[in-house]
Image 1 (tube, rainbow, N blue to C red):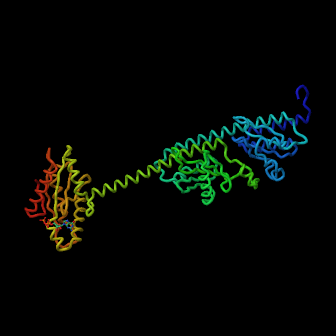
Image 2: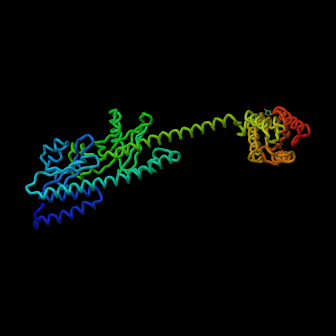
Length: 466
Ligand SMILES: Nc1nc2c(ncn2[C@@H]2O[C@H](COP(=O)(O)OP(=O)(O)OP(=O)(O)O)[C@@H](O)[C@H]2O)c(=O)[nH]1
């Protein structure tokens, strides 16, 4: 071109080229870009089919796009058969390199054409397209990476709140699908499958997992074929222990409806290396989250079991109030503290008579009723324990003698007024004592018992302070 005036046809070409370049520069997705580039090449070669191959990290090639979309692979079988650079060279296709960040990203090519537009313009078109592709990919990956980063933060924050793997998938599945442009996610953990979105059937998944586990694979990530075509599997592992698999699925092939040929299907890649590494990051987070969740769950169960055991060890089975062992501990503890407290010991009057008249089972009911009644009379921080047989002990804190006496009298009164299931009256006798400095538990209890004995002596159904 240099030194000569351009002809009118080359001006026309230039016009078209400027238009194509403008379109390429404004393409919003790689697919749109491939379409435009292939369409332009198709026109410049007077209707030759155009194929685009992506270079994999293994050095092999994969057909990623072809134009025209319909029918090309049926009429040009050789395009689909190209799997490596040697195949490409042997094919005699007219080739152009698409350069990515790290060298050749892929190739675009077409069968030799009888007429072809000016090659330097085509090269310019390819260069601009490569540049645009790099930009689009960088932009898209940056958005997705930052999306994944914030979802990973949310996952670690949610570990304690989410109660199961299904719960994790319900809360995060939709966002992960969006970030990875996937239709479905499955988590295989301890022989169970948990699915979100559109996944292959459980039968197909179990079959696939069997294969994955048998392969004893060393790779970090595996693209799936066959019935799980479009799936990517990343191992869930913590500290080198394998827990299961994270599977992601893209059901839509890059070449819609073109690829009936299953050998070609097997050679299609649905995931980019950067996506794969992002999925590994997610799998690592998930493995930690699931393990942490398991630990939280086990801890909760352990705490519950401990509480139940502790409750059983400290509770009287008949009346459900504290037992003597625990009541002794409470008195022991309070005796060594500076807290002021009073001890009430009470006993059901003529209980042997009640048992003899109405039977032991009715006697048990009366014991339960009295414990319930006492519990209702006492305030929140007070302690009620069954001391043995028909004897109970109450410990109440922070009350002086007058208020303690009032409480004891109230208790007597409530029992007397209560309507029990028997015709005979039911009453109690109470011994009351206040803890003195340097009191030993035994001294305290002896005084309370003495008071109770005196109350019985004085005619029962009353309180005596000792
Ligand atoms: N139903 C029932 N009876 C019990 C239980 N534990 C002890 N007893 C009975 O409580 C009765 C206590 O009788 P005594 O010690 O003679 O005292 P009392 O008849 O209440 O006479 P006073 O103390 O003088 O009023 C005995 O008959 C015991 O068998 C129990 O868990 N259930």
